[in-house]
Structures are given as structure tokens and as C-alpha cells.
Image 1: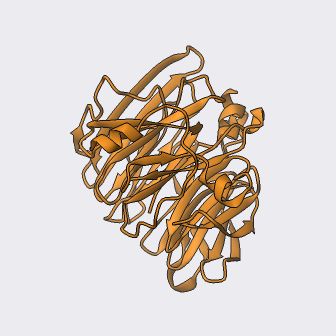
Image 2: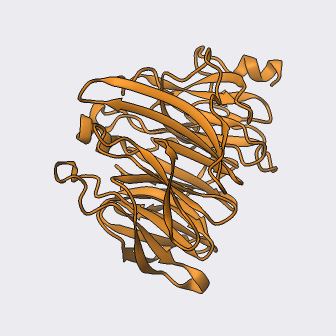
Length: 362
């Protein structure tokens, strides 16, 4: 979730285990190139815009079992910038949506060196398909970036405050949140915009009606799309809806953050009723095709994140990574990334930056 919106709304080896620690940060060093998918990952730390804390990019070497903070700043000699929201590795490059800095960084995925800076207004979500990267802009648009020229090649209107987007088949699915209109009940949201991208097309074809304040959105291997409708952070609780390839919508499960691998959906339900300050957090796994509950208690009770922000799954082996704040009310202290096997077994905890909002695999 975009922390600006949130604040406004509420205002398994010994080497690996040794590397998963909260000791003093290591000196930033770039690992040797690792070419196989699943051998490396970046951690995107959002920072705190209102407290003047810039975002940062860390690296986990899954090959060497080490965690290296601040790789972007160390390699490029400059700050990552304000309020990074999401990132994706596509081809040989990492693309990072920088909401507060109004740009997308394009960096080499192996060295973290800057390739290009692409200016675009308030980018939040990002995905890739068919040789293009697509960015949801909080001002109501989706921007298309060609990955050869690294230049924007089009922009279309989708609705107020689009949050995230995903690709499935010949289409993009964009969650339209109306997220700055909490006073009006997010009335112009409640939809996912469907955008045709087949054969070079780039046009919105329809709106699909969903729940209140849609945000995180993912697709499975069968063409189903899952969107988290975050509610109003009070009476209306977060829920996951399923959009089938025929655009029919059904309730799927409770959830505030999701990660999908193949036909397995991992759901974090982390809800605080800010009128009563009562909280509830669960971790479950479901089969995407029929909604069957695969694991009702996915993570071990003794090693749970304090206040989960994000969940990501390694596409190579299914390991789960969960970013967390130190507490539900702390937006300025360094957070953590918890690592689990695909079966939910605890591996270790990494000390991360402020508000670790995404783990990006390559």
C-alpha cells in the first residue's frame, strides 16, 4: 500500500542462517553475477516521506546467503529517492516505481547501476508483458514504456487513483481505488479497469465492478485475477475477490495482501479496526482454481512478523518473504523481512530498511 495514502486515511544452511541477522549492516558490496532465476532478490524499502526518510534498495544473495543494504546508493552515489512503491525485473533490467520522485528508475538487474530515469507522474504499480512495462499513475492513468527505447509510448485514462496492475492473457487489469476519497467512501473506485494490450493495442475496454478501495492485484497461471479490496480500514474489512477469464467476479477469501505462484495463493489478513484499535492477523494458502483452503495456519506461531506490510513468493522455489514494520504504529524505524519455505517453515529474519514494501526476484 502507498504509505502516503495510508497515512492520509488513518494518519536452509548455516551460512544462510548466519546472514539472516539484525546485527550492524555489512559494507555494501555487489555479489558476482548470478544468472539463474531465483538466485537473487532485491528488497525495496519505502522509507517515510513525511519524516524525510528516503527510500532504499537492498539485496539478498540467495546464492551466497547474504543481505546487503543500500546497494543503489552505494553503486550510483545517490539516493534512490522518495516513496518507492513497487518494482519488477523484466529481461536484464529492474524497473522501480518512485511515487514521490515522479519517475521510474531503470537499473541493471545484476549490478544495480542506473540505466535510465523515466519521468512519469506519481507511479505506483508496475508490471510487464509483451515487451513493454506498464505503470499505474496515481493521477488516473496507465503509462506504457517500451523496453527497447526505454521511452513512454502511450498513456490512457483508467480512473481516479489506480493502485496496482497485473497482466493476464491479452489484458492488463488495473485496480482503480479512488483512494484519496475516503470521506466520500471511495465512491468512484469499486472497479478494475480491463485494458487490451494484444498485438500492440493499448485501450481500455471495460470496468469490472469489485469491492471498496481495490489495491493489490495478482494473476495465477490459469488466467484468473485476484484483487484485494481494502475496505475503509474500519467497518468494511479487506477481502480478496476473484475475476475469472470471462470477467465474472466472486468472493474468494479474507485478505489484505496476496502473493500468487502457479495455482497457489498466499494470503495475509492483517486488519486493524481503527475505531476500536483491535487487530487480527492470519496467514493462509488457497488453491486458486476452486478456492480450496490448502493451509489454515501457514506460518509457525513462534516466528511471526509484528506488522506485515507485504508478501512475495520466490517463483523458483516457492519460498515466502514477508516485509514488516517493527510495530503497527512505527513508520520510521528499520523493518524486517521474514523468510519461510513454501511449506511455511521459518528460515530466518533479515534486518531491512524503513517500511520494506516489496521483495523482487531475478
